[in-house]
Image (cartoon, rainbow, N blue to C red; front, top):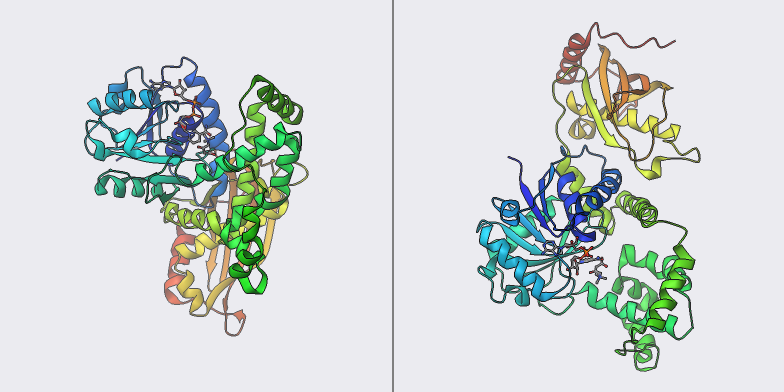
Length: 474
Ligand SMILES: NC(=O)C1=CN([C@@H]2O[C@H](COP(=O)(O)OP(=O)(O)OC[C@H]3O[C@@H](n4cnc5c(N)ncnc54)[C@H](O)[C@@H]3O)[C@@H](O)[C@H]2O)C=CC1
Ligand SMILES: C[N+](C)(C)CC(=O)CC(=O)[O-]
């Protein structure tokens, strides 16, 4: 049964939540009094629909519907998960929580995106305080996995449900055990932001120079090792103890402005806004979002390949999205989106990646006929002896495609497959591959007949696919 998430407040963050839930197969309802909300969310969802599927090798779930509701009660009634994402004002959050709880079911999780309020502040005076948790996400919500889960006085059952749901939609719920203003990450980010403001105000660095100091250096380290592991390595062979002995004393030197906050005068606002315009004003916000998303996808996919940090989480989530091939004729062996890191200087999917796509297709087929991991570990497999690939139309980053596979020959050790790669949006033929494989013994590395159960499955498919002639392959 389709699950329902309601997003109350569809701005930058609410739009990101809506996109993540819908792309993970949930039906999404949105309540936001802004008459422009529908347009703004459609733009965020379009960006997310291009970026998020690029993270995965597995097919994405069928996308859920997104509906807009003028009545808050109607929007929340019967929802499984409700995420409050209205502006950061405690009086407004209290009012909205009261209205939500008057109509929401008792079993629903009510998460708040608040960047700074403690859960106990939100729970105070609520009809059912135990139903409310802080679920603080990071922008863009549809790509960054972190969500700080702060229970405060929430019921254990609510916290468990929240964690389960957030994990199911591909997030990393970081359990924040003690509630404090701004949780863990924003406490940290506020310190960095404050120091950056001082550097600009004091004329020491421009906004661009500060961004360069981050993106050419420590920002790259943070994405994969965080702070403490990075500093442990920086301590050399003696590790963290040496690092602290060397740099601990600096903490009492005047390296930072500590808690002083620069006053937000009109002059400071103009200084920063003007420098930001000079740095990035040539791009629209949507263009910057696209650059940011493509870079995040490339970084996350690199980490995925290394099973490191957030990439490991995406790899594990990918495995939960996989499902067995059906029994259709032809078999749909691959369904996925072209990630940005598969494109080349011509701005389209590089020809080398087609080989990977058809290799993935034959691996899926092998699993389907019983030549799976266990079979390979037992010393049997198929080797590809020939690929004849035709490139028929360009394939672009962000496009979903699928591969239909037919078994054209399945006799003894010979296996010949015919793959057709098609674009999902219009079923246009993108590429074909005539692929010949030989069954081998991994002990002798020479060809040999398959085990009887694999041969039987291959023969069954060859019979089912007989007469399904491939396109002329001359
Ligand atoms: N922008 C950011 O980087 C992040 C923001 N947050 C938190 O998310 C929450 C929302 O922030 P943003 O999305 O940035 O703000 P935003 O200003 O982009 O969006 C707020 C939305 O709430 C709507 N709204 C106002 N009153 C409402 C009501 N009574 N009922 C329903 N909707 C209403 C507005 O029309 C607007 O679309 C805040 O609590 C903020 O601290 C959390 C993580 C990051
Ligand atoms: C600026 N901010 C406090 C709203 C930022 C966040 O809450 C998290 C983020 O995405 O950086």
